[in-house]
Length: 463
Figure 1 (cartoon, rainbow, N blue to C red):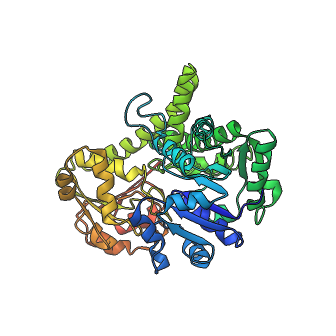
Figure 2 (cartoon, rainbow, N blue to C red; figure 1 turned 45 degrees about the vertical axis):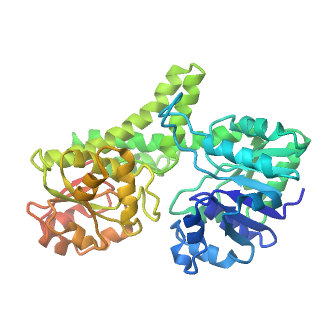
Figure 3 (spheres, one colour; figure 1 turned 30 degrees about the vertical axis):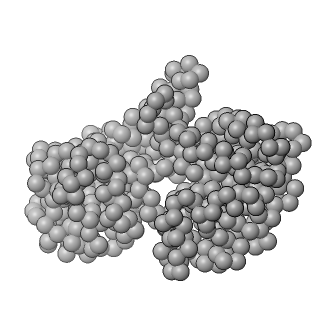
């Protein structure tokens, strides 16, 4: 089963980079990324490759190498589906905001629409690959739709979850810890699995390509994110205890991180985790556990989310309490809006929720992020529907210059760990702030002693 043409439905943070790397590494395969969003496809096709819609270090160079050779971006979804041997589904699967499972279950509306479109258009046998993060047993939904269309086309369904960390996505794709492929354990399923293995084997050592049944693959994705998020919430829970004692969370993290059984990764205390996966996947796990009546299992994993929400509220409340229990009319400068450095993704960013809490107290917020445009900041706040769009526009100003964002502020809050923040002229920032000048370091990236020598009152997480 040789794959010559690939179609990927969805040109977002997963589909775009993944297909760009496949195209780069497999010049003999034609890769077409399709999306109904015309503006997004136009951005992927922009002559200036630095203007592509997803910011990832190294991605522009990968796209530049393959685009127009064997990598294409198009809005003609039907044509790409019809011509493809293998179709990746990489559309959004947000948490449901309505009906049964509201607030926890994944909304599979877009997945089902993709499946129905594939079934309607296809005239030849296809391999369909789940790339979106999906709840366990979604493959059975796809199979039901695809195999009951009555047009005689045969489909094989594979699960190939992504394990990308935004900010290092290209590196993760080029040198992954593992590639996971799940499929049916019959002759047709094994052939389909091998076809996808052959693609990744162009650059990934075969011992790193793991094959499983489709259900194990789907559950492994949710479990991986749940375990990582659990570590973040665990260290953040201890950061609050450190703030009430003489302990320092950085010292605690270093001490336990040297234990080989634990390791040092994901033990960085912060204002809370964000991104498109952690919260959504854990809530999905909670919903699945509850649907099987596993109350204790559901409650255990839900506590990871509860702790994360608490950390964001706690950070906002600390700003309010430190500024004499009122931020009404006071300017708070936010450095960072993306959920982490080296990405322009703001989904579930802690900054959104900290800002919302402060805006409820009538604070004025100045925002600077090196990669997030002003429009996205307002979209994020408006999506919460906490107040009118006009109020958000009046209370929040987005700056293109960090020094302007901090000028005349009562406090600076570090919400994203961008490396450039460490290099700023903090004396200049201090001179232009109202006194006493406060810094709330939500990422523990600044030199506290150096800032205190300048005159700042510094409140880092966990000390």
